[in-house]
Each structure stands twice: as structure tokens, then as C-alpha cells.
Image (cartoon, rainbow over all chains, first blue to last red; front, side):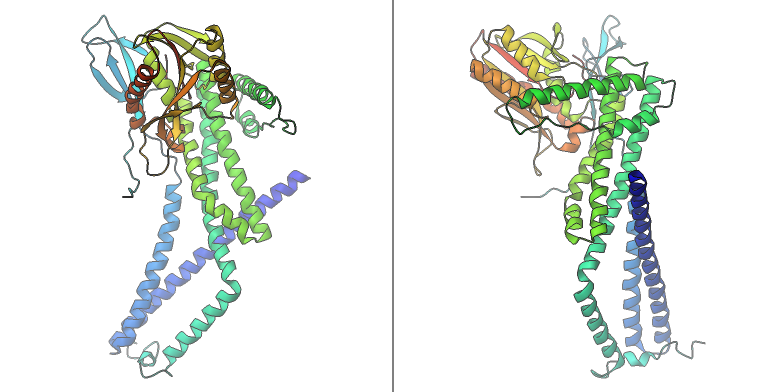
Length: 145
Length: 378
């Protein structure tokens, strides 16, 4: 019984969530339509020789079009962002004798200080994994304080 | 068609204060003013609710992905005969009840017992889910499941406050949630990137301590210590260093508290100093991989290990030094960054400097690499 009520509450919330986002999309679309109408009116006013009215209407149209376009872009970006980034992890393989270092992509089963096959230059020495790491290109803002 | 304007646009001409445009603008301002007086807080709340909703959608996606990755990893590694999904779902809801603290005497050992029971239970569950696994894989899968569990918990707590805020229409509940959401999302994203690292057995940022210990003990004979730790005796600068780390390469933090206790007792307290190396949380503005030195037990977790170490150090009057590698929570649980890997040599230099400056030749020192040994052998 309690579980049913919980499930019901969850369903209600998810439908409410959908409702809000549908309303918002609807509002954005209405604004978009109005902005296009404003631009059409601006064109009409310009042809009628009323330049000031044309400028006012064009400004309203452009601002509304930009804002609604931005809102749509934001919601699209949020869906695009829904990805778990899997970083590229590199494994450094080193020969303990000739110190030759090679880098390759991480393979399942790799670990630091794991012994691998013999080195190509020194057949009597085994190679070893000496490092496993990912390289991060810093996207963060720096603050000069 | 164009000859007849759609609107009498000459009404927009600035012919004075009484024209139609001015009137419309004035009424619009009054309208907005009145709407904001009565519904300002509601509008503000809807904006916040929308922000929380977006984060909640993202959290749900991350949580579902976490579950999917975990199930895939179990199927791939453990080759179960039955579908492990139902068992994983049950596992995601596991909880641990802390000990009663009305009379706090002896609470540390009660907590220790509870944590041991939890750990054993989880390992048994993983073995049931993935029967064809060795010890290393069991540890890795346990870590993967724990990350999925953390994501599930974060999602549920955020959802709880979101629903509560909407049900009560309380701006303050929603506002509190919206204010802490950036930090919550950062932590959730960190756990999400940790999932793959745990499933594949890649070293993570928290493994900085074990990596230093592994580099120091590599090539020397190791022996097992309680619990899930290894130790090697290594000569450093004319001193005898007893180096301890959690046993790798499986995902494992061991119980350094028990290991240090055992080594101190074996040596009858004749230890010059204890040096602990761990990953430390950096403040914003600090660089990842920065090395800092200090005093005290550098070990996180619920505090059981720190308590045991401090107790033993106080009993034998052993000095305790700490070296930390700075990183944020995201770096600590995701695959190890190059900066952290590169800091290992700097940490070793620091440790050697401490040994030379603070101990005499012939002394015995304990060096503990604290952290998760996933992807780090010895």
C-alpha cells in the first residue's frame, strides 16, 4: 500500500515535471511566433515609410527572437550534455634495462608494476608498466588572485 | 496587399506623452509591477524548480548509466549464469546503521565491527553475483558497485528534497537545494567517471599514497599485514623504512590502522617516526598534484584507522608526519591525472628530506601510503 502511494507520488511528480517543461516550450514557441510577426510588421512599416515604427518593431522582434532561440539552444545543450565522459587513459611501458619508454592506450588488466613481455631491444629483460594516467586539458578559468 | 498596413504603425510615432505606444508601455509596466508583487516569489521558485529539475534529470541519467555499467561489468567479468540485475538493484538499496552514541565509550570498535561486517557482506554478494572472479576482480567490482550505490543515494536525496519542496511549495526548501546543487553535481559527475575506472581497474587519484609506497617498496620482498595490507623493509638514507600500503592491484584501501598497530607492536614501539602519505582535498585556486607537508594522521574515512594510529602513537610517543598530494574530489575518484602521477617523485623527495632531518641513522621509520590501491601493484 505504502509502496503504491510512493510510486503514485513519483508518477505525479514526473508528470508535473513534464507539464512545466511543456508549458515552457509552449511559451518559447509563442514568443518565437510573435517575434517573427514583429519582424514582418517591421518590414511592412518600413515599406509604408514609417521608419521609427519599423525600427521599434524590428528591435522587439530581434530581441525576442534571440531570447527564444537562446532558450531553445539551452534546452538542447542540456540534452547533449547528458553523457558520461570517459577519459582516455594511457599506459607507460618501460624496459627496466634500456629504459625505453612506450605509451599505449590502457587495456583491461593493466596495473602499475605489472611485468609484460620481453623488450624488443633486450630480449632477456621483461618490460614493466610504470605509469597509468589520464591527461586533462584544463578547461577551468584561472583567477588572478 | 502591402498597400494596406497590418497595423496602423503611425501610432508609434513620438507625438507626445498621450500616444498609444506610451500608454501601452505604461500599462505593461503596471501589469508587470502588479504581477511581480503578487507572484514574484512564485516565479522565482519556478525558475529554481526548473534548474533543480534539469539537474535531477541529469542525476537520473548518471544513476541509470551507473547501474548499466555495473551490470555490464559483472556480466563481462563474472560470467554469471543468471541475470544479476535484480541482485544489483537490491544491492543499490543497502544501508549501514551506525552504532548508538549515547554512551560514546568504545564506539570506535563498535563502528569498526559494523564496517567489517558490511565489507564482508558486500564481498560475499559480489562473489554470488560474479562467481568466476579472483580476489582482484572481486575488489574492483565491489568498488564499482559502491560508486553506483553512491550515485543512487545522491539521486534519491536530491529527488526527496525536490518533491518535498514542490509538495509544500516552499521556496526555502527549493532554494537550499538549488544552492548546493553545483557541489552535488560535481560529486555525482566524479562518481560517474569513477565507475569505468573501477570496472577496468585503472588507478585513481586517491591512489597517490599507495603509488608512492609501491615505488619505494618495488623490488623488495613484501609480506602481508592485517588487514589487506602489505609491508616491505627498505633501507633509505641509512635508516630502515617499513613501508606499508593496501594490497594491490585490486580496488582496496585495507585497514592501515590495524597494519600500523601490528608493526609498532612487532617492534615494541621502537619506531622513530611515522610518515603518512595521502591524497588531500585541495582548495579552489590550488594546483592539482601540489605536495604539502604537515603533522598528524593523514587518513580519511570514518575515523577508525586514524583513532587506532593516534592511540598507538601516543602510547609509544612516536612522532607523526604527513605528506599530501592535493586534488579535488573529482580527481580523487576518477582515473589518475598526469599531474598526480608526476607528483610521486616530489613526494619521495619530501619523505627522504623528512627522514634525513627528523631521524638519526640506524632508526626505524614507518611509511604508510594511504588510499585505494586499485591498479597499483607492489
